[in-house]
Structure formats: structure tokens, C-alpha cells
Length: 275
Image (cartoon, rainbow, N blue to C red; front, side, top):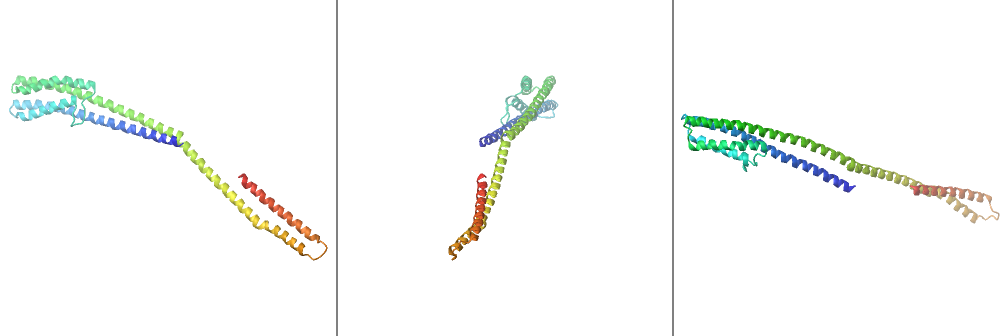
């Protein structure tokens, strides 16, 4: 029974530990997905801001400092989506469809970076051309973000379904342990308690009978025995020559009373032995 109890405890701990490991793992994955979607959203915003800065520079309303800073953030974010980022603690996009869309954006990003590096944004024709590239990048980035959101939702659904299954398994395991392990243990304990109570009751009965025997021995047995001894004493010291029949009658009565008392003691002793 002890072995079953230990096995039950080990199984319970194992199930709970596995559940926690699973939940923590997928919570981390969900956190990574949220971070990736956030970075992808920033990519869209950065492409729009770069386009705006180009027009501001073209019109003489801004310098290149902000543009280069936005370009650097844009490039780093794109690399992080594809290759991961240790500072953000994620390894990059894993979903194949989303990753393919992001990889298709790389040539457009490189072309826009080349345009910025050549500093031809003061030319209206070149500015229109790069605006088209940025617009195409934004459209494709929207597709990538939607793919990332869909992948994250699928993971979330997988987590929910798996957690439900694990919860059901945990419930089944607990119920099984209750009926297979803990309930028999409980029943065994109840049986032991009943046995102890029964033993206590038997001991009380035996004690009562022993008290009864002691009472018989101390009172009922001593009376006829004292009578017999007294009669013998009378017979011994009676000076008359002829035997008094009354002595014999009294001896007979006392002997019968003594016999009944002894029989009662024997009977009570037998009853105790049977218990």
C-alpha cells in the first residue's frame, strides 16, 4: 500500500511539473510572437517615416540626421526579424510563410538603402521612384504582419487546446489515483479503526468479566468456604458422642453452594477465552 501511495505522489508531481514546463515554454513563445509582431509593426511605421523624411529633405525642411537614424533602426529591425536579437531575447521568425514574406522584402530594403546612400533624394524623379519602393515595401510588410498574427493565433489556439487536454489528463489521473490508490488506503484505515474499536470493546468486556470473577472469588466463593471450615471446626470440637445430622446437612448445602460458585467462575473464564 505504501508503494502505491509513493507511486501516486510521483505521478501527480510529474503531471503537474510537465504542465508547468509546457505552460512556461509556450508563454515564452507567445511573448516572442508579441515582440516580433511589435517589431514588424514598427517596420511599417519606420518605412512611412523614412518616406516622409525624404520628402522633407527634398523640400529643404529637414537634414539627413533623422533620416539616417530611422534607416539604421529600420535595417536593424529587419535583421532582427530574420536572424533574431539577443537583446530582445528571441531567435527570429520561425513561421515559414511569414519568414518567406520577410525574405522577399530584403531586396526592396537593400534598394531603398542604396538610394539613401547615393543621396539622390533631392531629385524628384528618384524620390518618386523610392516612394513607390517604400509603398510596395509597406504593402508587403502588411502581408507579413498579417501572416505573423495568423501564426500567433494558431499557436494560441494550440496552447488553449493542449492546456484543456492536459487539464483533462490531470483530472483523469487524480480521479484514477483516488479510486486506485487513496480510496483503498482510506478504506484500509477505516478497517483498522474499526478493528481497534472492536478490540477496545472486547477488552472492556473481558475486563468486566474479570471484575465479575474477582467479585465472585472475593464474596460468593469465600462465604460457602467459610461455612464449611466453621462446620468442620464445630464437628471437631463437639464433645457429644453421637454425630449431629444437622452438621452433615449444613456441610452438604455449603458444598453445593461452593460447587455452583466454582462452576460460575469456570463458565465466565471460558467466555473470556473465547473472546
